[in-house]
Amino acid sequence: MSVIGCHHCDAICDEPDIPDGGAAICMRCGGTIFRRQRQTVEYTLALITAAAILFVVANAYPFLSFEMQGQITQTTLISGSVALWEQGRFAVAALVFMTTIVAPALEIGLLLYVLAPLHFGRALPGAVIAFREVERFRPWSMMEVFLIGIFVAVVKLADMADIVPGIALWAFGLLIPTLAGAASFLDAEIVWRRIGDLK
Amino acid sequence: MSAATTDPAGPYAQCHTCELVVSVPLGPIHGLGCPRCRTAIHRRKPNSLARTWSLLIAAVICYVPANIYPVMEVTTLGRPQADTILSGVVYLFAHGMWPLSLIVFVASVIVPVLKIIALGSLALSVQRGSQWRPHDRARLYRVVEAVGRWSMVDVYVVTILVALVNLGSLASVEAKLGALFFGAVVVLTMFAAESFDPRLIWDQMMTDADEGVGDADGE
Image (cartoon, rainbow over all chains, first blue to last red; front, side):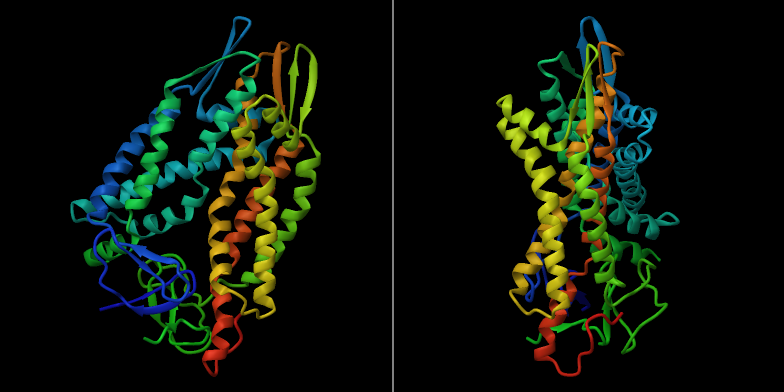
């Protein structure tokens, strides 16, 4: 029997028995303390592996092409940050680079680093720090916001020129539900305990 | 069942990072690390209110230039046209894209303002020791934390246009100063939300029920 606490209001209680898929709701503040997930490591690992592949595709190919009077330009995920940097908007370029490339890459990469060995009953060196940092980077990973940004940009350019969606856009569209699914299947408490049991 | 809590001086503290509940000595704690994830253990986020206020004030200051200065300048066939956050919304609306214009209006105009007001009132309510509707205030905090990221939409729109519309004299888009301030507002309010400790709301509720609980700002 162990003691759990609500991170919203700090009420603590003995850990209740929660069935798989059920959630512990704080009696005091009504916040969700945790959600128990069956086979959290396996489900999250499967989705995060898919997300890793989609993320590579989303980065490798252009997501939009723009054609005006016979001239064509294409953008990839990174070319936005590069173009801002070239215009001297260094801070904005860094912010975009951080939130659309670095943070999602770290979120995916660190989870793979922790969960793949955990599935085989191992923990690689630094797993504790890696898993801790996943939570720290998650709020800064804004792929889904970027997708809305693409839609708005397309609408703004629609009367000006021809806009052709690229492969990366489809990868992007799949990546967002995949990442959201991975996040919702992740039961951090169980992962922490499994890392702890291996030590 | 008694609702025990990790009250500001009691025998328990919860790790802010991995949420492990650990036994700690009574009174202020210093230099204690979480046995599970090795981050420093605090009873409450350190200097929560001071950090929240300073980040909020910085965000308010940046909010003004973010809306006054254009975020980008679109040049077609040598004719430059500056766009502010608000004129971008108006453009979408005028072109009949009202669902999208609504999203951008809410994300870029409403959310930053409401977020600043909400966090400011939460901080104020805690400072004044308010016991008014703690459930609703706790919920308000969770909403603020969740929606803040959507304000980045406009920064991304500028980014995509800058990268895509790059045809020299025919058509080009340049990012302007407003984008910098707008990005700053989003980042500052996100940090402000992260600095605020929602447990402070509940600390006020205990002073009635429990005896001998100290000041809410204890670490």
